[in-house]
Length: 570
Image (cartoon, rainbow, N blue to C red; front, side, top):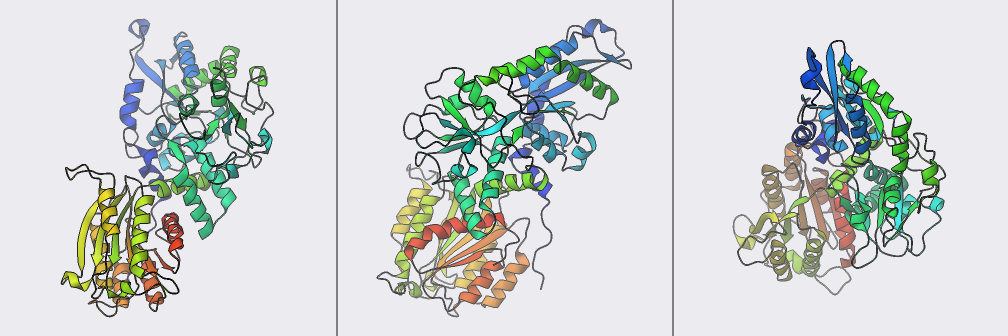
């Protein structure tokens, strides 16, 4: 019997499907790089005029723009080709898509020189064939700044700057009690990648580690606007505890230099941190453009431009703090412990973990309301239905507004199908019924009023029907699943057997469009082995709950399952 596991999705394609691969890259680059033709072109008498297109990260772009002006003053000519430089601020994730041949393909407006914030972007771009062919494997660094954990100076319990740990990013470990964590989306900024990598490295692997990683991702507040967190937009906060933030050190220097109401202190994790090295990358295979890029590099290494970088809060490429940094408020001038581990597979894993855990959910919930749900939960003064009701209400409180949720109630008393399709798949935050009530509020009211209908559950038939329904309307931008809340017994009420259901799920399961089955069964389960096989056919899980207080952990554990789909074991 075929099991439907045709092939594992390419890691490169996963990365390029994520927000790293926005097809808007071409439009942004056109707008940024199509500037007025320098007046000198009209008089140069060149047989051919070309433009050295320079894309730079936001924080270093002003220096590149000044260097481009200096380049143009020289009337550069290479083998009969006159070259003028044009520099613009372009987020690294968008350039990465262009130079690596992402969804927009290799276009005519891709840059000839690229200065991202970190060589991590170069590593990611070189995963593709086109990136490996054109991008320098060992680019030179213009400047550096370490990624730090920033906290308000008056935060209680702050460690010494050099004694901090990445562990303090995790919920429950933050100094001064519960407080938010702000970081850039790892798809858009290397500082976010560094945080994800460090937290995962500290947690290790296994189910418990995946659950803790899920808790971290769901708790973090990502900044996705520009690829760099602006501390002035974070501090001070109007109410509640001030957050920790994962920032480049130079952002702390720049922010503190304006004498803010909430000055920050930079903390340097003792396990080591990522140094943002601002690599100067030539991405063109044209000899004239490569020669022009070399001349631009030479300009950038002259004293005026190096001094400008130091004045902006950057360190030397080797991490040494220049004189202006020695007295900067909130930082430690000593060169911090850094590492070069965020490359290759580690980089892709960090981004993929974030995308899988932060991607919105799309789940069809099946709630068993058959006669079996009237039974008491073992050793407790409550029924299985009461715990199901509680689980449904808790699940609704855990999922954000952009979650798409639907609800079926299962009982043979509903007719031949054995179900009532109460709500179709729709966003919880949607208020599209004309009465101002959100879908979440409607489902909460339904969950509070769920009663046992009696009859048989038709469990196996409806699991298959639900899986087919979600698969048929699969959405690439969401985690698609079926969640079953049940007493765990079919009782022979379905037209198909457990073995036939497993075979059907294995045959239809597509690893590139996975719809995962999560079964939460309440009380002692005589059919535990059958239910486990059914869930495993889709890389899902069976969770048996004897204690109502376990429900929250079960939901969190099921979300963490995203990290191994479609190749999860039991």
